[in-house]
Length: 397
Image (cartoon, rainbow, N blue to C red):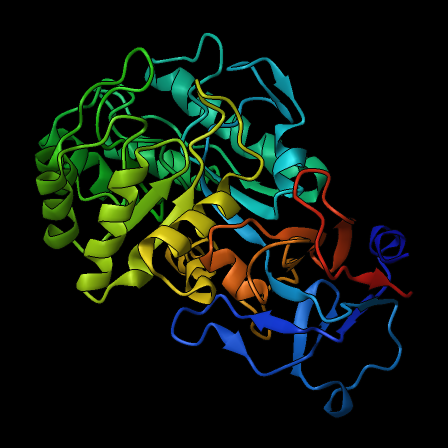
């Protein structure tokens, strides 16, 4: 009913009641004292106790039945090509499957798997603009995929970045996947991109695909991108001393990916924690890739980092929500008034050894996902990919 009203252009009001645990996405205050959230026309308007909020006139009503609600998860590192198909593994519906893993927003790190991807400057700009337009106009299963991330090549000038920004491009693909592999050259182009509001990320570690190469700490630090892409390698990680050098040598985002070195991810996490800078940690899958697509990659990273990295589960979820939202300047990822109403409902998987949801994550189990909501619209019910949850929300209206 909410979807029909939205399509028709009518006002919508979503009321979610009986939330058992509300995760905020804010690492400084990861748990909110509230059991109800109200969203009007796809944006959060109220958070608190049911008895204190205006819940009349709901067009959609969800009873959480004591389950956990969190901001929709964000995958900070994907490589889309065309709709919900990837030629990397000739696989369909990878975005929809990720939604069933709780991911409601994705960030492209470059459409690098496009067959015949253009390397000339005119072509790469056209390719990026096409990708940006395509995924803005077509949201697979409702997932917000921010795409159009050109891989920089030698010969690009400041005017090229100005033209890209004016055309709506807001991201750079991984620096180092193209012909620009030196720190000085990358730094100049990254600065031009930043001048025009385009965010940047860099390939870190050994080569992952033909055409990529080793990008070490010296190049990473000199390039000064906004995000240190897969600092734990994609797949091959740098030595610990270089990872520590990067963590200590800049204040940029530290992206940990599923398709990377897990030991190096834990080393990075511990380094960031020792520095008192866990707000820099964000998560991605780096998929589709040679190792395939991981629909549960983000929640697997949350569980792994919490259980093996000794991070409270409620903070680990911030790596996949609020940390990324703040760093990427998104209007989702946080349970705050004014933010997009993008949510995932979870609970302890049936028969987990944990006494409750948070302990089950800290013991290394995956949660069961019961529902996803994007822009106040219910997108999925019980996940087809996760284990069944003990508590599952119900659509009342």
